[in-house]
Length: 526
Picture (cartoon, one colour):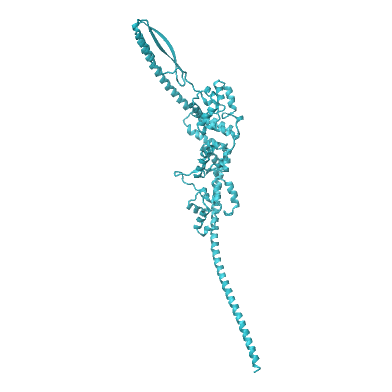
């Protein structure tokens, strides 16, 4: 009994130890099962992520292939563009910028004066002479070229004005000849009636009447007859009746000499239009102009509008005085040193305006205008559309796409200080171009010039009504992102955050600034 008790105790202790060990092993197995389940879940998640990455890789690979195709297309287009640029450079290498302006002016003169004889050839030669003289002169001489245009238009109308004046003179001569014949017939009738009265003594008075004709002066003599009869008293009443009849004969001709107008355009600074303004204000001769004070002359120009307010009449009276006195040599010497009728020594320097305030004009275009002598709003307002388009055409294809149709009107408002009116108008302009119901259809811009936009995305933007740089610049980020999101996962990875700003620079013609920024971007992202 004593032997089995220790054995039983040892067996019980061993059993308890085994049971404790088994319980620990079971706990460890349970923990390992739990860890296995966690690792198995993570493995499944990793497999899912790998599948997602494979799908995204495939999408990126497709985009990569699309971009390679686009790059190949762009390289082909670039080569074609380089060929076209080479053609233009070869064309313009043979001619200088001023020759194109000359061709434009020659075309204008040919269309206007196709029916005029050989005098126009001499005028075209004069144009060439003036252009060759002033090709090397600084910006102030550009104003003189504008004056040349006025003189050319003045002499272009000279022949027509001469014919019209001749026709008016002929009509006036016929009119006054008819009046003279009528008066002469009346005089003969009265004279015949008086000659029939007995014992009449004729006392003839000669009265000179100067006929008012524009050019031709004619002096007519009309005899007014006063009859005195040496008859008895009872006949005196008859004589008085006769004298009364003679006095009632109408004499319509004035007893003053007519004004013969001088050619006021001989005064430096006065063209045909200004001469008409002066005539309308009663100034026809050099002497009248010489006696007109500066304030009166300036008032005439001011009332005619902004087009004439820029002219300076400070020397007109003195020039007219020399012309009225017949001092033509002295006048010519003085005119040779005048610039547009203004003494050069007294002229103030031109203060340039900020032309980039005009919708559609950026810094580069402003430099082109300055290089052509256009520094101020007033200069720009007086420049016609053909001249502005010519400046852009000579600068190359990069500038030819711009439309300068509203620049002159914008500049006129700016020059007149009408900034509120200008701002309202600019708010409805698109890149400096009027957008109306009757306007030409929208000409789409190449949106792929924006960093981050390829042909496919450009098609998406076009489908959403975005065709031009200006439209893209005015589109907010949320709208752009929505367009990409609706197109699917392939396009959702793109970032449009810089597109609007890039498009704004392109719409304003700030290509150099855009290029510098694009060099710093990566796929259109900062």
